Image (cartoon, each protein chain N blue to C red):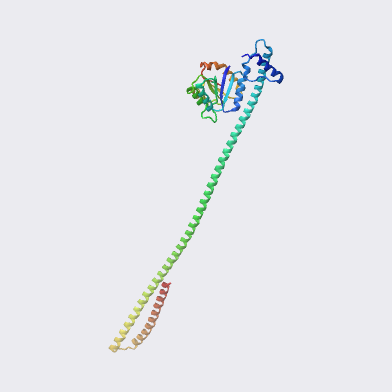
Amino acid sequence: MIVNKETRDLLLEIQKTKRLFLEGNILKVIEAEEGDVEFSDYLKESTEKDKSARRRRLEVTKQVQEQNADLLNWQRENQHLTDNLKDALTNAESAKSDALSAKEEAERLKEEAVRLKDEAEQSKEEAEKAKDSALNDLDVLQKRSQTELISTIVKVALLVILSVGVITTIMYSIAMWTGKDTQIIGSTWSNMFGILLTNAFSIVGTIMGVKYASEGKENK
Amino acid sequence: MIDSILLVDDESLFHLVFEDACSLLDISLSLEGLNSSDEAAKLFEGWQKEPAGKPECVFVDLNIIGSSYDGIELIRKVNTEYGNGTVIGIISSSNDEEEQEKAKVAGAQFWIIKSDDIEPRLEDFKKDFEGYKTKKLPFKVYK
């Protein structure tokens, strides 16, 4: 594309007075007229300046792009670290929460264990009481058996004594009735009767004593 | 030289790199940059009715952050919903073969790997452009 003379002169004037050149892709479409060395040189210089500026800008842009890529990588890395940190924090909080739950559970179990221990001690006391009570009952039972045995012995003894007394009395009565000598049997009967009375009272006293003692224990 | 190029990429810095590289390599006369695939789709919808200003070639980033769909979906839309006729492809730092296959199926004609030293790839692309324009060249990955 060839520009008209006015435009050509204006462009050259601007270049001379202001040191300004055409820039950009427009230079690729503008051509100088054949033989117009001045404008051809102008276009050549403009193109070189434009290319030089673009080359510099391209280098700078590439450097910035590279730095930007590094920054983006760092940003990504930072984000990754932040995410990791957040995860770790979340895990720590979760672990703390678990630990607190475990502690609460342990305390609950401890309280449960204390309660069970108290119950066990209470049960032990009750068992000891039951054991004492059983031993007491056994003791009473043994004593009752002993008393009953004594009572039986006493009854048998009384029976024997009374039988002996009755027999001796009968023999003494027969001897008196038949008129036989009663001196020996008489003294024997009186001795026997005295002994029988003494023993009978002794036995009755013993029985009453034992009975009183047994009743006192039962009441307790 | 390509008359007009449309670049769809969410990375603003890459717009500057791409523009300067294209200018230095005399690849295109004009270049327009967009940050989202939604904006690009809207433009293509408009160009269906009025094709004036429609770019000759479109470079689309694979992942366009903040857009409703990615580069491959935009290519599929451009090719199926808004009519083709434009040389279109992906420009991405990814070299995922699976994604490249998907792009090819969606109608992408090329895949340029974005890196610090993009100029050699753009030069190769410039040489191949006529082949893409005439649909004679198959899908190609510029590594």
